[in-house]
Image (cartoon, rainbow, N blue to C red):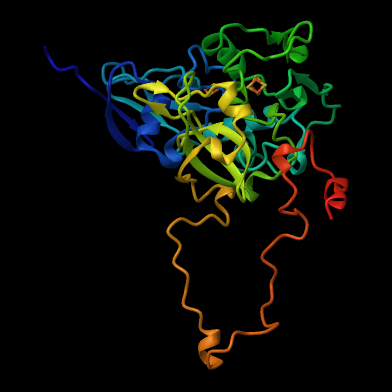
Length: 367
Ligand code: SF4
Ligand code: FES
């Protein structure tokens, strides 16, 4: 069998060889780092995703070796395949950076800036995008559209006001559950994610809509307002599950499991095991909330650029204690007496067992 000819593509002056049929986005992911365009709607493991949000726009400065003319308009890198000899500009193109800032401004037209109370804060792709490509203010003067919050069944809450209509959750329901009962209703400014007659999303595997949602529009009702994600300790764990891979990430506080999610790769997409995406079932996600349900493998590898990594150091080397040494073996009293247990979140209060969000009452009653 003859070897497949690889295509040469140059992105931001870095040339790599990729297989024919590779999208510009995937080629850029092979290089990694800042060369990779952000992607808010594309998701490798969901067929048909991409092409909705335009955050991944790039400039094609030369179409191919055979036809080196530039493409007149910026193209969506998630939906455009590379050609042999193609030259692409991402962060080296001022046109791209300006267009991306414009896209972010549009995405934020109706999106509330409620990060301080949003459960997705710290792991929100729109928050990262806003910091990296957004303007410091808005030019929008009109009333933002708002929606009432809906409980979609016992486990998932929809906060449509935050939705950016990326369609990922509808693809999850279509492709990895046995039945889709929600979708995007209406058009244009009225478009919204909804279940037509308030049906609940309770089919198995539907919890994965929470993991793919790039913003805080779909959140886990069993975790909402229980903790900020950067105060939790993410660990990799597994169990013997007959429905899914059983490979998950536990978000712990002490020995309490506050949340269970699938494990993500560096692009924020679910990890692949034996060639298959590691979606997790509802039982693993919502019902196995005891540490004893899981075999903990060790701390999760979190990018050090993420706020979640704060305070979680792997392979920590503590410096030698010098104070007792200079004080002839005596330990310091009062000196540097900083409490090591939070007086606000009382460890004896089991946050994962509360039926709803914790309030000040929860902690007062447990005094
Ligand atoms: S609810 Fe989330 S996943 Fe679904 S379309 Fe909106 S932003 Fe995308
Ligand atoms: S990620 Fe390409 S258009 Fe949204």
